[in-house]
Image (cartoon, rainbow, N blue to C red; front, top):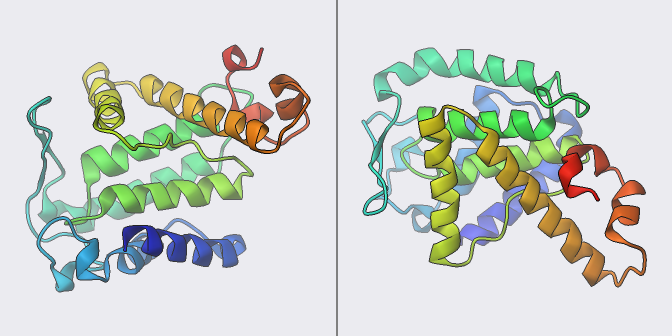
Length: 219
């Protein structure tokens, strides 16, 4: 059910990508499309909260490996979400892959950590909504996928550990690296799947993705 919903939302985004813009309405619409079915919920299904900000306090459960996380109070979401969305849009409209500060992976990592690990605006499905929006931003910028495949508990712990370390270090650099490695793995798989005879460096030099990879990964 979750995969099917993701595919449906991504298809709709692709069909209307030229008109997609990040707004409170579009964020809620993604949530509504993903979470309208009770089977999509990991928590208890709350139909009145589908496509709406949570009206309950909620914390991130990270036991037994890490301390639990407290998110923005539910009664503040209506006031703060508009400001944050405006800030996200300002950053996404000023992407420059020749600089580290404005690099798309830097902007994406910032959005990911703020949306998912501070705001957490919905009662359930925040990670899925976050990844769908990131996918839309990447597609608008002709950028390949950046999320590594997470199929084991060890990979899940690695992802969460990266997020927690970003919080403790008050920096998004570790997540930027995580995303860059995810993009590299994706491109390497594409090279193998297509049975390219050219080198990896030659492949990315002839594609649109070269500016998205740190120079340390392109050798």
